Image: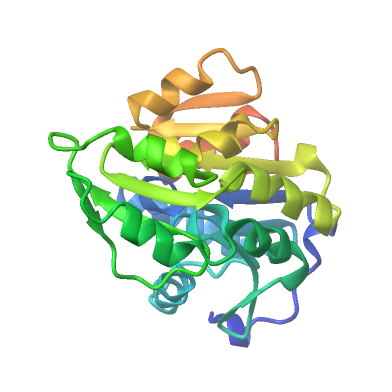
Length: 262
């Protein structure tokens, strides 16, 4: 079923459970069978299960992904937390009142960031035209860590994930703060939201106090950050299987009999 075919959904605040999930390695991770189990369960329970993508990916990628058969989310927090949008008729529509603070914190920093980091060893600019971030592919063997100082002196934040991506973001903006602001804005009971991730750029949303899961196969640096946090379940199941494992472990929504052991 496409999003445009689906009847109007129940508001997120009225749903029994809301999954706020990273994409690569998390919602898109695991075996074909694991993903099919998760996606089919979501589609079969749309009246009680809400879906929010919290990703480093941009809106164009999200639309292409869902047109290709992945369940459509109701909302997306994209671009490492710098986009907060609702999904309407297959379009990713930014929520202006939630993005204004992000836009103000970023200003017109894009060209300055690109110029300042242009000659830093180990960074290759990603050509995607992000609105409130600048992103680079990073070669850890060549990376010059003076990049952190440059970014800090510009009043911005630098974030490395999977030891191969270097993002420059507005100060104080990342997946976790944007997810918390979104949950408050939507009036969702925090105890009914599960944040799921697998790399260091997911750390802020796993640490932000909402129920959370680091899925199997997570980056070691992320596991070190969340070690000992009682609200974070460290799953054995990889990707999609780890999400279902956490839903069962935390009793967040009924699953088909035997599903937790799949």
